[in-house]
Length: 242
Image (cartoon, rainbow, N blue to C red; front, side, top):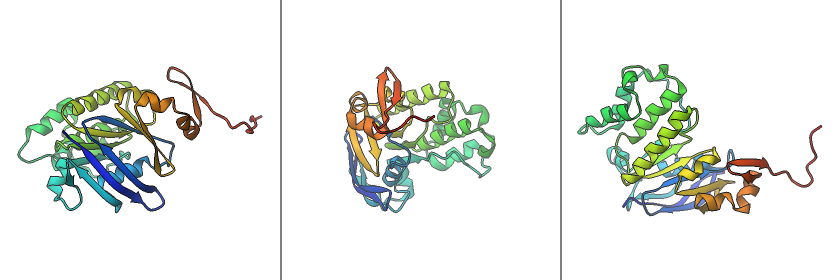
């Protein structure tokens, strides 16, 4: 069974020393206010910055592993959809796929409905189309751990639903996905929710438990008023705007 053990992850001024353990394939949401540390935590796990600490995937330390092996351990999809390199979609996916598995690229093109875009330069695609390409690239090498920073942003409703389905299929295939999200209504699709604020993990619970926690309301400054309905939680001394 796929597992993640991260110890002492830290980035100066952005992420306090943090431990994270995920013992089984699961779909984990990262939530928190802007600037709270969600992206810093994802980047620290992905080892794309010089973060302190250690990351183990299935007991194997990510640091020091050759690039080809690291691609099989984890992948990271950034929040930015900017791609300036005029490389065709098919070739971009090929950079992350294993040479001995050419059918993988075709399967991903089909799954993400990119067949008709396969020969188009990525930098000529729309933001939503580039999101699908980057999602396909994140999955190309069959990684055990997939880290996704705001993958549902800039997607139309159809693709939000399809991405959530693809996430669940990946979990059923034995993978761990850690996904940062802003739309709190999407948390019901996740197995676990982690609230990151002020550069630290503040809560780590089942989604329903997290949403009903008073600390959640205080950190987000909102109150649950009904099913997927929220109101602003104003301080008692705050005056109304006139």
